Length: 409
Image (cartoon, rainbow, N blue to C red; front, side, top):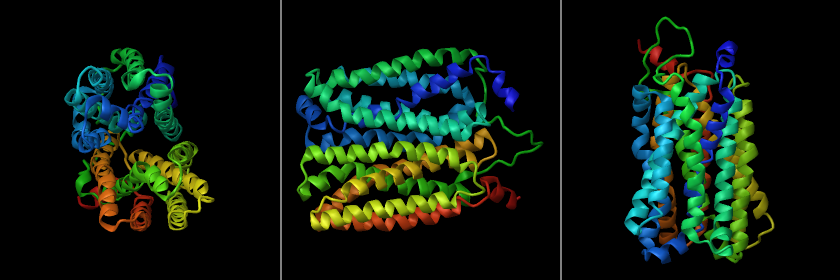
């Protein structure tokens, strides 16, 4: 396998292409949150319509993810990834050129394009870097999360501070998508018809795994889904929770930034560690413990209006979110034998998981409206920790999805 890696004459170009693509997987979405009020005023949106700005891309993830593996298998992963990046650029530009309808449609299609890379990148890494899965997964999630934090943190200073407006600010990230197009062009000339179904193991027969009937696949899916629901709900409501408790909106924004930055070392570190362990149960327990510290600190802050421990809670929430998200990405490769299985598991997990993530902020906002308190919301989030840990421990057992498929033969 070492030879298979060395035979790639432009492997470094592929590495660069993967990392620049990863920079486009969150930033085009996260930069819009701080700009929502400005976009709402400029496009004359209602509050309800403005709420779709961050919800539509996540719904797009859920809608298309189950079909991406089949599309990648039919047309080749690199071909599909190039098409996705091209589509991402076109959708990013289109949403800047019109009114509310074009903006929302463009934002939805941005989500569709990102979904293809979300699902296929883990399988591509399994195929092209089989001996560097942890390292490569850690690096691309690091690039993804780092640029997401930078995009959300700099959008208002660029738009309002420099006075360039939300359209130009959003357009900056469209330029990065254009760079990704250029870097992916050479990949079309190499193995243009490679199949997602190609195996990394020289097995005489490989049992086809139905992920939707597989216990480990469902454990991975629920682990990813509930951690996504918890973390994205926190990201959506944390500044509001803190400002309602008496913290200045500016400081509350920096708390959220701290959460996002704390993800970076956690997501990178878990990718390096997870494939070196016999099972990943210790990492699941650390993730559950840090979620508990984070939500516990937040609960104390909201109950007492004492902000002394909120920064520790923010760091804990970031570590927990980065660790569980990074471990989810690693599960797609650690729990599968072939590239096709990795792609199928990734597609199923992200379809269900991002549906949870899309519903989370709305559910917790409704819960707050009904109870009149953010404390109830945090109690429910603490309860989700037990679900995350339970399914994470089951997924972490030293078995792959093919184990249950073979038992049914």
